[in-house]
Each structure stands twice: as C-alpha cells, then as structure tokens.
Amino acid sequence: MTLLLCTVRNCKAPLVLDERRYVCANAHAFDVARSGYVNLLQPQDKRSKTPGDTPEAVAARRRFLERGHAAPLVDAIVRALPLRQGDTLLDAGCGEGHHLAAFRSAYGVDAHGTDISVPAIELAARRYRDCSWVVANADRFLPYEDASFRAVASITARMNAPEFHRVLAPAGLLLVVIPAADDLLELRSAILGAGVERDRVDRTIEAFAATFELEHRERIAHTPRLDRESIQDVMSSSYRGLRAREREKLESIDAIHVTLSRDLLAFRRRATT
Image (cartoon, rainbow, N blue to C red):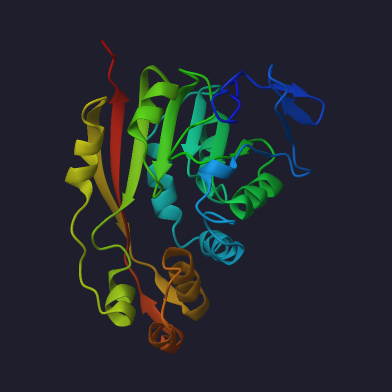
C-alpha cells in the first residue's frame, strides 16, 4: 500500500485513513472529497488562490482527448513504459487523468495521480474511480514515502528530479514526455507567428543525468485534421494567455492539419552512494 505523507510544514509524518479523512500522528487532518480525492496542498505551496490549470483549460483538454485526435500519441506513451499488473505508478502533473487511466487500463497498475489544479483532480476523480488522486505541488514535494513507486511518469508536466528519485524504488523507471519542437507548428505559425521552437531534449536529459540513466529516446508524431472546435480546445488548453488579436486569428481557422508531436525519454533510477 502506497503511504501518503503529511504536507504541513516540517511534519511529513505518515497519513492514515480514518473514515473520510487522512490524519497524521501530529493531529493534522485532510478530508477526502466526495469525488474521492484528497487535497494536501498547503498555503506555502501556492503562488495564487487557484494554482494550476483553470476549469476551462481542463475541460478543453478533456474534450480534445475524448475526440481521439491524440490517441496514437497516448498509445505510444503507454507502450514506452511497459509495466506489470500491480506495479505502482505515479503520474506527476496528471491533469484530468486521461494518461494515467490509459496506463491503468493497459496494465492493471496501482495508479496514483497528483496535480496542483483542483479542477483537474476533481474531474479525474469523478471519471476514474479506480485510480488514487491527490492535489499537491510536485515542484516542491511529492507527498509519498520513499521508494513508493515502481515507475513515475511526467507527461508534458513539471519535472522534479530529486523528488522523482526519492519516491522511486531502486532501479525504478521514469518516463518524461515533452512537446517536440514541431508540436502544434501549423497553429503556432498561423496564430502566434512563431516557427519551430528550440529542441528541449538535450537539456531535459542533462537535468536528469545525475540521478537517472537514459535508456531510450523516441519522437512520436501524428497529424490529424482538426475541426474548429478541436483547434480552439487544443490551443485553449496549451496557451492560456492568448491576446485579443491572436484569439481573432484562432477563431478564423475553420479546419487544418496539425502536427501533434512528443519526445519520449525513458530513464532508469541510478543507485545513490
């Protein structure tokens, strides 16, 4: 059983489920929401009153994924982290839960997701009740005991190498997925006037090199034809700060083929000395 830790400052004591709340030995308590998740986010972990993705961005991402446009990418991501039934998996920055649910469906893993966005975790918990969901700031602290997980996934999310290393079991697996340089290229060119971004693979590998060994790297891409609603959803979930002129350009596009592209980096945890 994966053990949660208290997130109150300077505590980190184990949390025990007592009916509908988690309690630690220092009497800190966290209620379990009606939908089944627990919010462990502390005031010092927030930079705003409502951190993370907004309800609108979360809903747009779910609509886009449910239309199946990214299905080939999701399938490739799941294949890139082969697991066995009962393995423990953490999706750090899980959003509305689509990818973690795909891993759960494919392998029967003991699936755990954490995200800083309450709307994202609320939506995940309501849909995928066979997974465990926690609101927390993965940039600062993953509220799990050491060596809790066989594998950790960070899928177009924030990356915290020291915490990933701490919560992974010896020789545990880490999958980092980042948007490739040509992701959404056609839309970025039409709306933002931006060309191909600088490749982020090398700097990502370097960020993990001290504690993780790279075992495999792969670029996956898919170019579906997106209708107006899908274009608006993918941009709304990826770019939250569109200006008025950019919004006008977005709304003028009726349909277009769009590149969806990811770089997959598979690592194995290095032993510490």
